[in-house]
Image (spheres, rainbow, N blue to C red):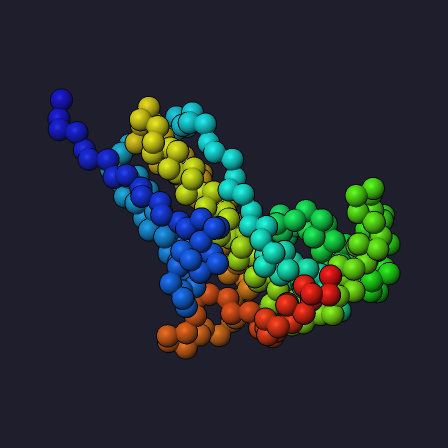
Amino acid sequence: MGPSLPIPTPQPCLPSPASWSGTGLPAGVNPAATVLAQADALAAVLDAMAAQFTPHPGSLPRTPLPDPAPRDTSEEALDEERMLLASATAHPTEVALMRWLQPGDFALPLHAALFHCVSTLAQRGDPVDPVTVLWEAQHRGLVIQDVTPAELMQLVVATPAGSPEYWGQLVLQRALLAQAHTAANRVIALTDDLANTPYQLLAGGRRALADLTALRARWQRTIPANPPAPGSRTTATPRAGPPRTAVTTARATR
């Protein structure tokens, strides 16, 4: 029996959503670019494993995988979603083009459902205003005992600041980081299970990165066509960004 080959062990170090606020990354570091670079490094390790071990189709890992990482529901994150709803109602033509943003990207299901109402109206070419959005929400059963029409109306009549694209990119970035955290947790669970063979670790690791890859493809659709100048940010730069005072003002009026 020949000498055993060393098994490269992926070391996922994708930051958790709790570190987005600036406590986990140095000031000025682009969190999306950071986690995507780390995901690329992990994928390279998996590719190196694939070159060393003969594949065995059908041999998938049986490791119980952890649940998806919890979404960031801080006041700042929810404010970004509220500002998106307000600006989307005020600028529906932009929303019709934002097919890269999906309901699953939102931290709060109610916000996701309301954005889906706005985008559906916009893509159909129907008028979009607080009244039509409320009607669409009622049609979809969003007005229930715990959510009154007045509460829904308040979400879409807030004074808009910035463009829907700007707020949508922030929402999508949070979803991207949460998915990266989920992928990291699942790869860690696979590497901690000593019953896994190298091929099972390879197959499981690639499956863990698959959802991140799909979300990454949508994120890249928000990147401007012209590449940024050297030394500038390398991922999507939200346009028409409002001053943070706009968010503070909106929060104070609720």
